[in-house]
Every structure is written in structure tokens, then in C-alpha cells.
Image 1 (tube, helix red, strand yellow):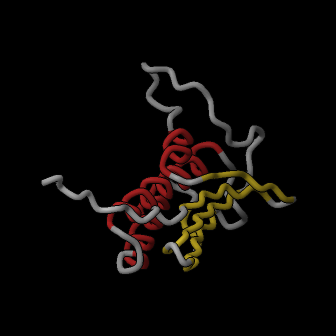
Image 2: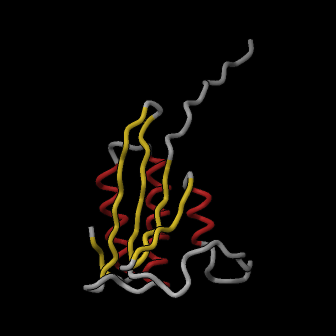
Length: 137
């Protein structure tokens, strides 16, 4: 999907993601997906140029595995002079934590560049099955 290269683009993307994946991932995973997508679109709007037409491209891919559903989020923009990278977050700073959130919530993330711009992606692996706790008696 494409969203405006504007703050409203993150809201539109979050709502559509939540609607489309609500029935196929757990509420906890969906919350993480929504948070990461908001960060990625927000970063694209704040730090990168738009794609032609003043937009950002947003996609997600769901892949079923024997352990559960794996999800990849991807946000493509027109690129920036300095690509996305983790940087130390100053405790008093109002920003600078977005990619730390992405890194902490996703299984892995990365950046791909081509002649038209850049794509930032984040993968979410299925949560391992939990062994139920058995009360000692």
C-alpha cells in the first residue's frame, strides 16, 4: 500500500495492518507490529525523501511456518543522505529511540538501498511454544 509522506501516513498504515492481521497473529504480536510500523513510517516521514508522488510504500508479508506465523514489515521511501542507524539515545532527548524500539521488538531488521531509495524492513519470528508451568504438589 502507499501512504502519504506525512504524519497521517503512519496512522493509515497502522490501522490497515491492525485490521488485516488481527485474526492471524496474537494480540501481543499485533501490538509489536503496530508499534514498529509506526516507527518505520514515522522515520521515513521525518528523515527521508518521499517516493515520486509524495508517498511512502508500506508492505507486510505473512509466512506460515511449523512454529507459527512469521511477519516481515517493509517501508520504502525516497532515501536520505544518511541512512537509518542505531545511535545512542540521550536520556533528555525528545527523539532518537525509534530504531531501538524496532530492534527490541523485532527479531531482526535491516536496510536495503537501490537507485530509487531505501527500504527498511523488520522481521518477526514466531514466538517459541511455552511449556506450561506445573505446580509442585
